[in-house]
Image (cartoon, rainbow, N blue to C red; front, side, top):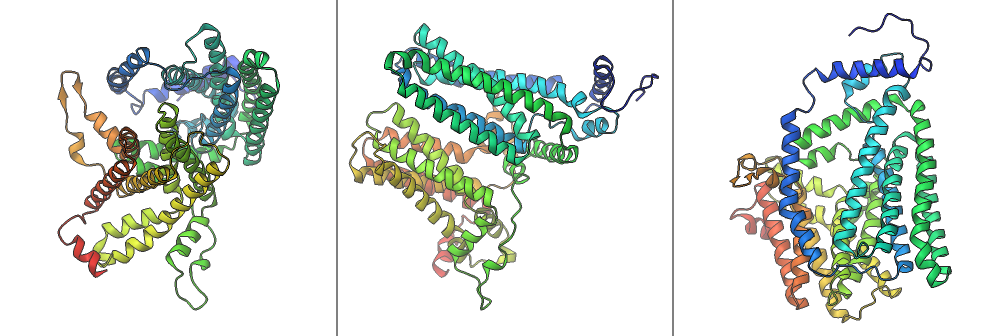
Length: 524
């Protein structure tokens, strides 16, 4: 690679035009290495998107246009707290995503080339950040508007549509800059931004509720949109200034890990890619053993192992509590349909995510079941040791979240308590079965790569996507089936049946689903 013959000043000097030309030359030379995405790869991606639009999006749009909205916005003043909560969730989620995979992550080779030059990080990372933030903002805006149109009646009238569009534009402006902020700023700065976002959301909600009804209806969403746009401008300016001081060594490690995870996701299984982002356990090693030298009980072992990754444990506690509250709210209002089914599904998904983050015993169980010659065949105790902690943790978390929602009288619909308890218990069993199915996943089966020829082309890619997210698919389908059944007892029985199928499929993945299964369980 050749450079210009003119003398260049220090790293922070030089003209913008010259730096832009040099960066463009490096990127053009890198593009000719042959390992970038090809036209055929982009065409296949567009093909999958078109299939998704034809089979899912178009029928959903048609059903929405011919039926009433799933969620009625009603009073705009009443919608302001929900919009503030959505904006805060988008900000926090973008910050968290930036800590793991931010907009400055590029190919390790290209980053190494740029780091070896006299250019400052702002010269070669600034353009990448601006371009990716524009893409992320556009995708966020389209996704938010599509979700609002399909699920609510926000775009039913011109007045509400303009206010809703202003809010969606504000969220699509704040989320990308929060994504960049999460990567380039320290943990303390991220906590400050997260706390400030929550405080501002509470203040805006209080202002909208304290104003008269007419003023709140006309001012609430406009105020939210203005606050989001102002916050996005301030945060974005500070985040772009921080690019020049970014930790290049940390960015190189993030880029290398992201490249490896991307290779796993495209050529194998998604859970192998996610394993690269698991936090390393630290501390409390001696707490697993009693003073007399014996191991502690099953629950104590699981709790100690969960505490060795405090970040994952905190996220699991939050998800289980939120999921339990959402489950109680959705189940209590299942007869009214609409919003209740959304709460039910969202609560089940939160519990599903929290059940995987509650500890590392799921992965240990998978390893012991797949390496039977090493660990032996007396594995009934293995199941008890590995499943005791996640089952108890999920049950306790859901009960606490649901009990808190019941005490605060959040469920507004008076369903019989017995029915609520039955359906929540069935949902928890369904979630645990789906989690077992997901964690027992091994390598990608070769038969999934075989073509499925249809008049619309090859649909094997959809099978691979469904296999990658099989646990989540099982949860969503199971909740939908439970919601469609009128009898709570039958719905709970169906949930138990779906969970049993998930467990049986998971055992088959590990090679243990054969005739000796029940014999081993009795002997254990």
